[in-house]
Length: 308
Ligand code: GLN
Picture 1 (cartoon, helix red, strand yellow):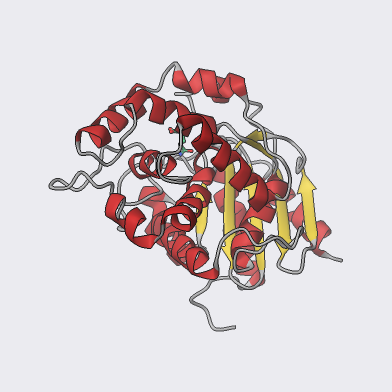
Picture 2 (tube, protein in one colour):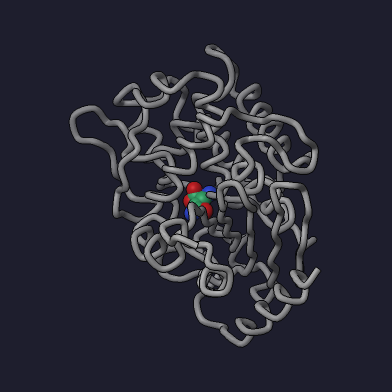
């Protein structure tokens, strides 16, 4: 297949770009090797192609959000989820204190406020905090087709500085959006964000979304097609935060970024794509990742609004 050579060539074309910076508000991430670079692609018929540091592990961070949203929809149903978190782009940064003024409902599940609310909704009603973390780890592992583990050092590092997320969780508790102790909710959400993945894992996870919720490697159904449609729609409108409109017009695929440098895109019916490069732009999106995806769109015509 020409795909691995193509991916390797694409990595070379962005390698010289050292702009951006690693996330500095999580000390463990600030010290990560900023030069690592990878790309991976997983087709809906289960072929994986990769180049660069595709087996290097890093924390999933916000890329966990669409998958936990999907799990919450599967566990609790659409009405219960929409009652707690809306689906409107916020136009704000990922950590913005943005909730609807009258209800306290976060604008969407891709910003931290909405993601903390979603974490506290997974599993059966009445699930304990431990059961929720297990449900998230099990569910994300099913999307990846491999058992994922928490990086305890990253989790501790983020928790020791998580004052902003704690403020968000307190606000959610005050509006009865979450029923948990706010600190417990943040601790669970932070463990969720600290799950270790590789670029190949992320490509399979995105590939599962591209494949109507069936993992292309294991053949196992993870969530329903209706849940996937909802999740991809929210990724398309809100996945890149205040860079979402620019992303959708230029790259044109449902996507999600994380502050450890991961980035995924899902092409419905075709493939999941993932990149990894830790230096971030001012929106918290990977600089070389955005450039790679811009190239992929130009080369492969993957913009969903473009007629092939
Ligand atoms: N765990 C990070 C946070 O809550 C995730 C942010 C991100 O990846 N954009 O701040």
